[in-house]
Length: 408
Image 1 (spheres, rainbow, N blue to C red):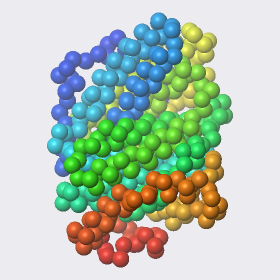
Image 2: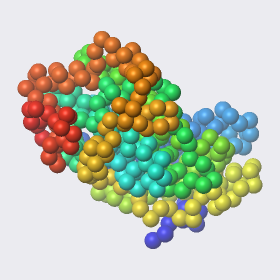
Image 3: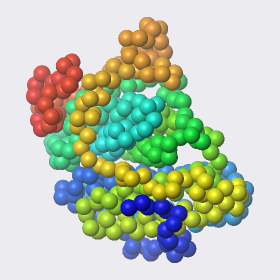
Image 4: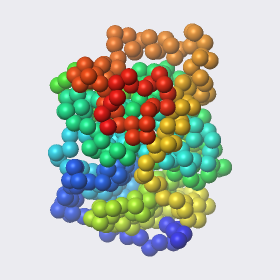
């Protein structure tokens, strides 16, 4: 059934504030929760954080008191929504276990978006970074076994494979080569805009998490791994953020943010298996509709633009879906592991000139050892093999197959 947010009543923003007991929700049980419920919680926390950060930036760029006040009210509600979503994570879920959830989000969200992306340029951007996040999951899974003695599949539920992607030490690029060309706001497919906004928010959350939690460990190998992968997440935020058209006004961006939140809460609602959490998605969907109405009123008043002029008439037919993407990831692995970037282009590594800045950057940051390689080496030494969860057979790239079969 078609769902047009502009035709929904929603909940008035003035009625959306909640008390402390409503915010301090009961967390899920980390060993019993559906792995894809965990990743939905992680994604929606990232979406709320993006909305809050955008709103703060917007208020710093306007001296219109009414806009500032409307942003402040909606932002306070978004802060409450973020607390409810993020507080679903249990206190006994360690930062490393949360990290594995973050990387499972990155793999299966990116793969799903790429599979459904209509723009070839944007699809390529998704495919390229997909292989890097896929490798990060493998590195953190080995760290989890190395320092905790547990297997990542206890958290991923074997729904996402754990095996090398584009090796992390090869992902480090000169900053110039992380800047992409952007879509054109007047011609972009509305679905593409939603995809890019979603992946920017998801990767930004991961970047911020690693920036703040990389020092939670005493083990040097863990601290080193977070320091290294945190830099790749910075690269990814640059990579994806540059896809957005900067010509959209702040008010138009506000409308797009609210619309994207509606799309994502509606998507989570379609597939959630936990009845209690499903009620949260339903409530937040109703709240976001009210927030879209406020943003639309501001756009209409100050720019003379009707929200219906820039928004699609209805949400996409297909909700953003968390599901296994094993075959798709393996196909991209087989075809694109050797790709690098040269400016805005994607090229095979063998096509880069010997004096390309990629190689100079590699020599600088990888001098003296690489944490992402060290963690694999140490786990092999400790357990006689590395940790993998290859449910679909041997790695599609012969050079990346483990001579010793990994635990699954």
